[in-house]
Amino acid sequence: MGEMDSTGVPVEPDAALDGVVRGNDWRTLDLPELGRWRPTLRVTVVLPCYQGQEALDLTFAGLAAQTYPLDLLEVVVADDGSSPPITVPPGAPFEARAVAQVHDGFGLARARNLGAASASGDIVVFLDCDMVPEPGLVEAHARWHHVHDRALTLGFRRHVDFAGITPADLTAAGSVGDLVVGRKVDSPQWIEFHMTRTNELTSTDDDLFRIVTGGNLGVRREFFDEIGGFDGSFNQWGGEDTEMGYRAFNRGGLLVPERLALAWHQGEGASGPDAGEKESQLQQAHRLAHLIAEKGFRRSLPGRSFEVPMVTVAVDAAGRTF
Image (cartoon, rainbow, N blue to C red; front, side, top):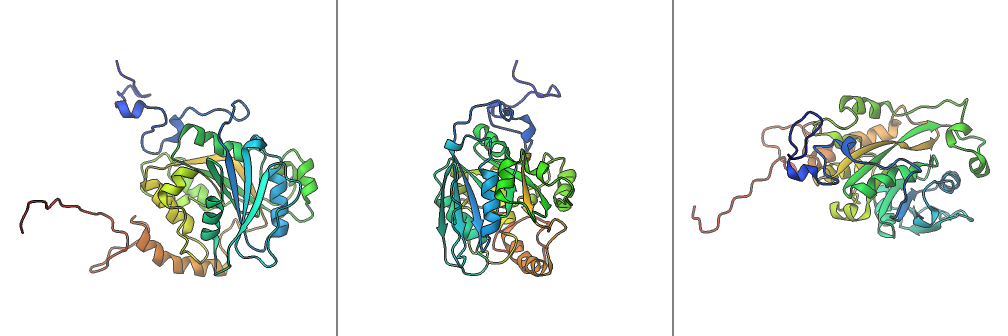
């Protein structure tokens, strides 16, 4: 008798293959526990950065404490034309280097692509330069990419004021959470809303990709290249990660929420975008309507067309006359 699922329903042959799941039900994958497996894939952490040297120094201290084998880890700082240029903090226990581009508007998408293009790793973890990782962040991302080559691992973040905390403090601490005890901590509630709505991204909703955020995100380098990376023409705040998530999801990407891939954002901001970011969001919404063919992002009006259609119909006209 063939393989059955948990309800006793026969599983189609393809669905029984390793790494294949139904819909987006990432829970069915056989995943190693943190600290109880032997990684083999090289990871590149890409840190896009603009005028954030002090924040980067703290983030590097967090990366130096990672549980992932440091000989399988490299860090690429992608400088979006900072003045003075960003420098790699000295003394890192892993390979680290900086690459730079000319500053031309909000260059986050281009900086991430630049960092990925410079990566030697099999796995790329995108981490904003002001996000201090817990020691298990890289390992938590990487374990999924050892068992599924089309996963997008979505890390989580909390926001806290790092005033008075030095890189040396982070090096001495067991975890970032231990170091910020007693400080006000926030987390983005809009993400938790969608996590609840979609049963932790295991529902059949068409818009699971809407919570993809680029500030703490893992992906196989090969899959990232296949989907075309981030759209480098985005030059304002917001939208570039949602649009990339849409393309990945529609190319068979598995969206995995990984709560153990936790980073701490240096400063407030969990409550939502500021006034300038809200204005940018409104401007980007029009563009996303053209690029994301999902009903939550566009309104269908008579005579209106979009750059990316909802449906494409191909008719084989070979040997036919009209």
